[in-house]
Image 1 (tube, rainbow, N blue to C red):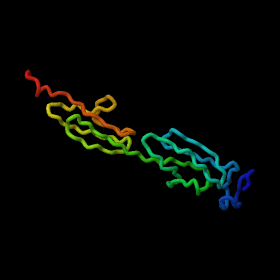
Image 2 (image 1 turned 180 degrees about the vertical axis):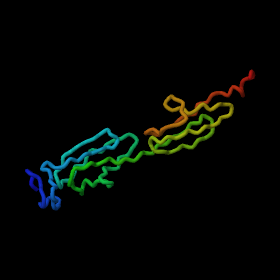
Image 3 (image 1 turned 135 degrees about the vertical axis):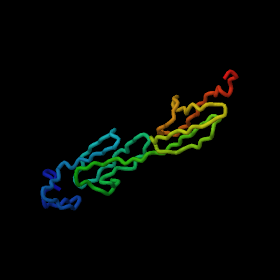
Image 4 (image 1 turned 90 degrees about the horizontal axis):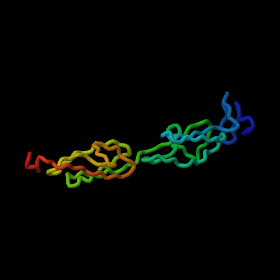
Length: 171
């Protein structure tokens, strides 16, 4: 390759065996490869020479998700085989992790645990317990009726209030 001027029309790239087309100029410094983590937290740029392989980047992290690889034009990029031929953006591919929500009914109706993806909103069931009024479910010291699944397994507890109509001789 011509490292000083880059390649021009009609020349053959000795690295990737590509014939350069009219008005296509390969920059001497190479191409910009952008790594987009999609969640907006990290954007990294590197320069890669024409025909070179991209060095495998550090695996990104996003709470509640599993990183599946870097995508280019809908395919997971193969860092061991594929070579750079233009400026490009590789986008992180993520899948939501599954977490279990368990229910401590504190003597009320049994509620089976549910397994859902991170950030899935679930409506919590209303349950009964003799002589008690169901007040709701406690999560993080708050009474909730819906829950956005957190990035960990969790047990939520039923909160009860005495049904005074059944226990008070004055009512």
